[in-house]
Amino acid sequence: MEKKLNLEGANSIFLDWKDSLKIIENKEEKTVLEFGCGFGTQILCNNFKTVYSFEVHGVRTWYDKTVELLSQWDNWNGMFHTGEELGIREAVQNVYKNKNNRDQTPFYNKGGYYDKLNEFVDLSKVDVAFVDHSQNMKAETVNYLMDKNIPIIFAHDTKHGYDVYGWNLVRSNETYEVVNVNSGQGVTYWIKK
Image 1 (cartoon, helix red, strand yellow):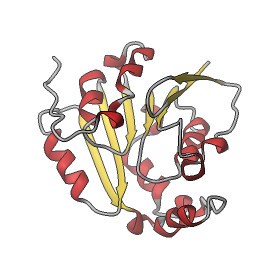
Image 2: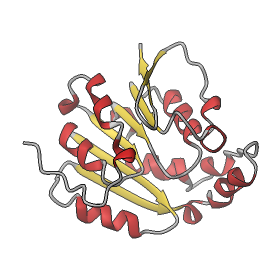
Image 3: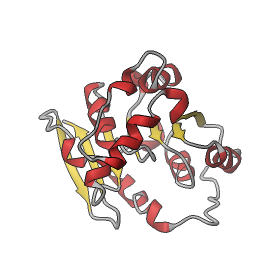
């Protein structure tokens, strides 16, 4: 049964991806991994069997607010880390200073971003991944997920932020079909053929 959403204080521009979910068949049987979390996580919880949210941010306040917001859903699992804790803070800040400085090495450090992600969720059991985190290496996240053969990947904010999010760095992968959805901020799907 669908639960009532609490969108008080939400900016609708950050939720303009929700109508694109119709692309995904049998959502109620699928597990979704969300990079980031917030008001929209409620929408995922109402649509998917299981929701995992991996939040990396500078402060825990937003995550704690989201935990409270999602207390009525028993299909939600969340994990929070700071960028500093994972050793990626400097790499992320460097992208803001120089768009060409996209050193991903810290993301792969022992005990770092991808290690913590894989401790949190078994990627072989993920059907859908939603890339909408505050960390600016969104394109690199899409590439990582394609390398892990996630069947459906979708990302928000694909109409802008090329320098920061690095959308031009998403590798062409002939095993995925690319579907662009015309929304305010832009949504792109990579669907395994």
